[in-house]
Image 1 (cartoon, rainbow, N blue to C red):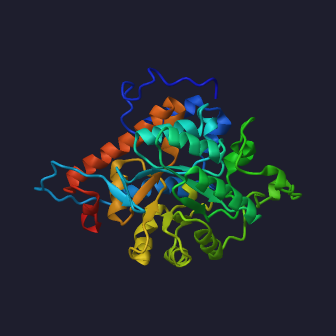
Image 2: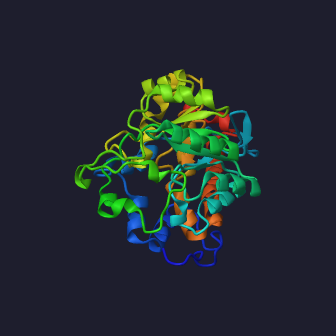
Image 3: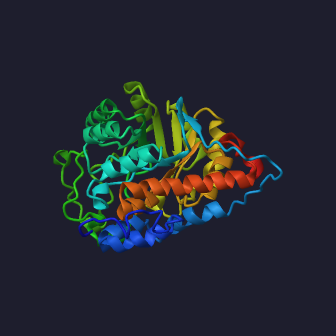
Length: 368
């Protein structure tokens, strides 16, 4: 990216940003080709990437009419804390690729939109800086973690994150290996010069002698994660531990039995195992398996308020948004992050009114 300036007037409302998809092409014009490939790409033939988007619209919403919807309430309770709406920001790597303030801009935008921001292990800022800025903007944030082969390195990072104010830990369990990300392989994994990951101690990793074209293991990712790791984390930390990357009911049950406080239905944005099911396809069966024991969250391809309404009707407690946040950050900085969430929140409110639902708890399977 060249020197960053906001798009057009710098005001996404004045510039007519009315639907999330508009910002995708705007963002693509502002990124170098390697970074854009990293953002837009998926694994393999990108079947799962595209199905994530299409699967939400395969559900059909069936509204109640002749209902007084003059007062709408989008608030939800998550781990004993009331939130203004069920829209969270998913973890994505290295926000300094998209804006010079990196995760600071994301946190600022999220706070203004009353959204929890999940920070990635691969963030471009140390967790101490993330926590300090969250305090400055009165923002709430969670910490995503990839377990490392040396678990002590993971514990060191999570100790810092919890001390810095992370309200929950999000453990990604679907990445013992990266997927066949062809775009990234052609573009040295989409990592432009100057990108660093201050929360990953690179000096502790031994070089992999396997030729690049035959390499499947990432030296920073543990390939021996089990339910025992989840139990260990729940014992070590006094904040909720969520398990991200669930696509099967039996795995959801194992996560809950291991002590998880919540599960996130996710296929890693279509970036790992291609031809894995879309999250909209498997959400309801996972909700049915955990039977209200813990909240179920979902990400993957959510672009409209009707997608959120569908997810909640299928039993999700909240949704996480990934790529559209990057589009907003790239084009308008913190204001773009806020506006991306605001678009979805407004569309959710419209969907609720048209469905005859005055509160989030009214969104149930009866409306599908």
